[in-house]
Length: 215
Image (cartoon, rainbow, N blue to C red; front, side, top):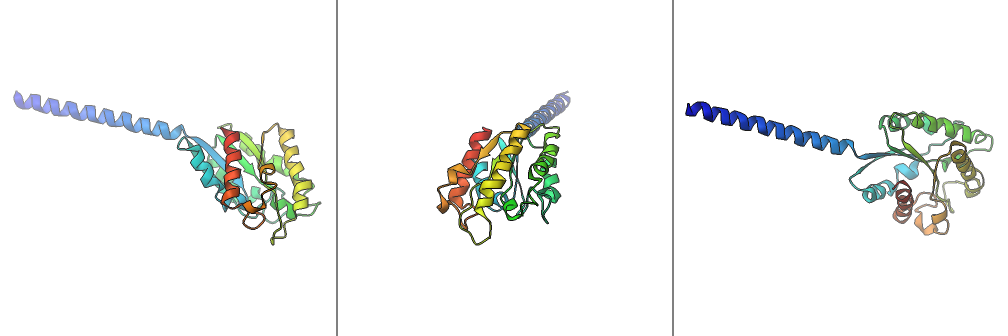
């Protein structure tokens, strides 16, 4: 009789322990599933600078930040490396984000006026798949940072006078919010390592502007 009771008590504790473990694991999965997923889409200013690291730290553990930047990519399809034709474009969608931050356009300043003629149409084509995601993400278009004297051959005037107005026009047409990283860095050439790519100081400014917008 004592042996039976001892066996029953042991079995009961095993059941209780298993149930407790199941609840604990379920709770952990729920927390992980509830993090806000932020897909950062862009060119080398996204992929090769520190701004995403800074942004991730600022947002904290309730957010998961995905880096989907690809160097030298453009919005315009009339180029040899448009963002829409890169694997990262599909990967960013598969990430099923709650928030999409798109910072493209800098490399489009390299292109001729004719190649940029359909910039807004191409940008809208890039955005539509994100709007169609089941997660129904909030989408932000980032006005890219300014360009200063550089050895990369990137013309600041084209970015200022043609590309940035087209970014803003796209946002207006689609009713999307913009995040301005251009203005706060306009008088800070020292915040760039080569006149185009921000250093840590510039990355902190960009991350701060994006943080303030999405929170």
